[in-house]
Amino acid sequence: MRSEPHTDAALHVDDFATEAIDLELLATQGYVIVPNFLARAQCQQLYDYALGLPSQAWYQAGIGRADKFTTNTAVRQDKIRWLQAEQPYENAYLKMMDRLRLEINRSLFMGLFDYECHLAHYPPGAFYRKHLDAFKGRSNRILTTVFYLNPQWQEADGGQLVIYGERGEVLETVLPEAGKLVVFLSDVFVHEVLAGLRDRYSITGWYRLNASIGGLVDPTH
Ligand SMILES: O=C(O)CCC(=O)C(=O)O
Ligand SMILES: [Fe+2]
Image (cartoon, rainbow, N blue to C red; front, top):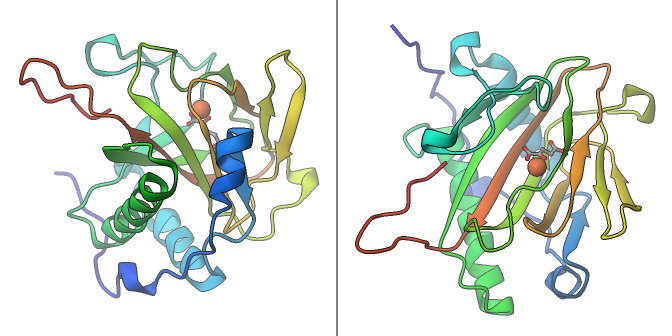
């Protein structure tokens, strides 16, 4: 039997105080880093929630979707959990990110259709090698969001997200610190997660375009 996580004293979407994102910068640069997207208290609640999840709530992360899904621990070693609207904490996060979706659509006319995201847990030593989250013309993942939950993360703890430019140069080295949100174009920026010394928790998600054809609803993840 699968035990479900606790649901008491859950966050509500209206509890979330989010810092404004520089959408102008996102439009011109293709990515943006927001140091304190979410207030500490709410971030801590999400962190405690993630820490409290039973081991059977997590799955070995894979590569590809649906029938093309494979797990390859030489490429990525994190464990994930797709967020579901039925779970109050998870629903609050999904709702908050949906508000951001509407804001992005309003300001940048991106026509983002939906959002999917998963919690990710990188145990010490786990990494995710260089990759793109989407391939030009072959995916409906448009914007990647990564939100970090880790209090007091230090440089020496490792686990940085490295974002590369077109010529392979390092654009950003990002510490996965609690409250920080990174947003980037999914099919433009190669990135990787370096191995760290501590358990590393985050919520990674994608704003998508609707790619349903001929009445078939495009499947999530
Ligand atoms: O956790 C991060 O910093 C990035 C994760 C990532 O690249 C992914 O899940 O596709
Ligand atoms: Fe990625």
